[in-house]
Length: 258
Image (cartoon, rainbow, N blue to C red; front, top):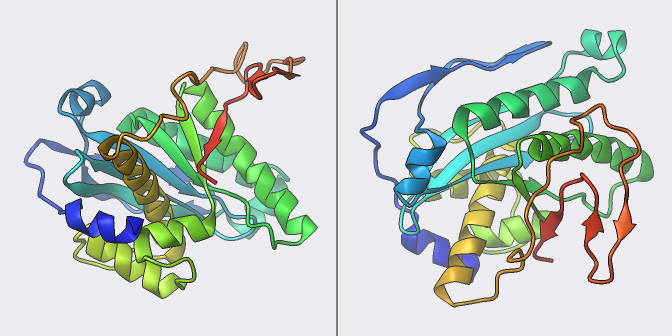
């Protein structure tokens, strides 16, 4: 139902505002230079556009990212790509992949000023080792969001597929083709990890637009993102569980529709 709703309002329209180049820098992989339309955070909010940074964290493969914005009637892609840390760098430093993912997301947040971050949740069928590695990557993703006072929303893989493709069992190729169609892209987003990140961003936009259109309650009405206390080097952050289920401390609150 949500997937069909998307096709009704996500119509790509070219942006005539000034463009600039954003070049990602990462160890072990050169991110290509892409010409994208970027407007300041205050400008796109004023014009009624909601901008979302979608992230598809990976335990071993590339981490996908994509930035999509919508005004409630039209959707447009601003930027997307993947980050793959080279094997040599990973051998030289155990935390190289985590450091590069964190640095990349910080640059994306600062360059595009998104209103929210949407992250694909951990797939429950993963084995323990893979799940732990994926949790480490998600940890630095949440850290980057908290440091920039950015809301984080988590969506299950099947929920993302159902939202974009219309059913929860769509394969990688189907997701790529649906993302291309919804965003009216001239090329199929490659690799599949980047298309997945764009799909997560679309899923959040559709969820929020459906909530506003049908007057559904806002699950985050009383929740505001909090910045990590004393930045990343802080220790001894309290983790007290309140009666209403919220956590008091510097860590970001992960919101999920599941």
